[in-house]
Length: 312
View 1 (cartoon, rainbow, N blue to C red):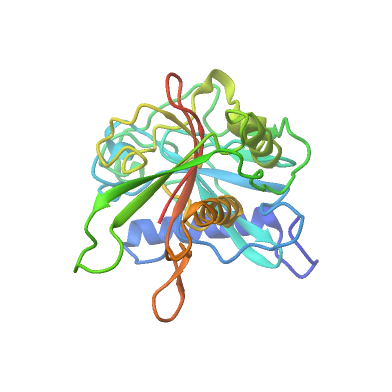
View 2 (tube, one colour):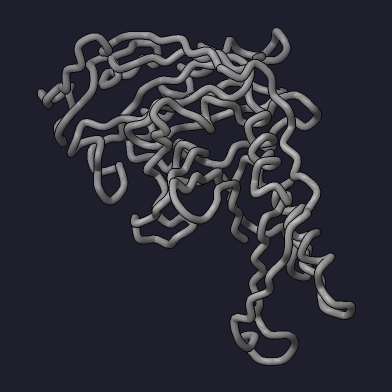
């Protein structure tokens, strides 16, 4: 929910954020923008996302849509939301061309362009195609049956179960990469963990389903997201998997997936190391600064396997 009664109404909060974001986009402001890391989410057994929220369809201003400027070139859009959860701001967004999918226990409302709740002139005019703003005579992309509409979406998975990695029952394969930069000490190594749960991924898949739900893991048509450049197979846009979560590029601030995965992986590797070998630690440096990483849920349609992936 939205928290105590002193918190703003979720829908009003969503609209206020969307208006602020749109103002930043069109004024060239340096605000955090959609997808910026949110504050740490509430702990405990409750879901790390709100049960109810409103997503607003939006577009970037001309020339502010990445290298391909898809909002202008093809009339694409994305969805953004903000609300309160656990006493903190909760904000999220999708990649271009994707509608959000409900996480377990969620019910949300989609507001398609044009909409007036944000108070923004461009949002109230519709979906733009081309570099000219609609308020300056630009071309509107018509979508009969969708423009100005509202859709309520209810999650197929009614309850959330916190994600936890299963007990490691596979094998660890060290890969020697070469001498350590600067010389001295052990050689640089990578570690491949095969068949983590000893069930060819079946146990891990069941836990992922309980935590992230059927709408994310089994979307209609198995579409997933194409927002996967610079992901597991390199910055080449040639990845051969479907990314199911998140529905955008990065997930560096959603620790409900990253931390359990990272903790279990490090523990399995450390247990396999010979006595005297330095142990892996997710905190690094003299000040113990946390490592940086992201987690994704991927599905390989042929060969290989699926599951979460993390980088540090």
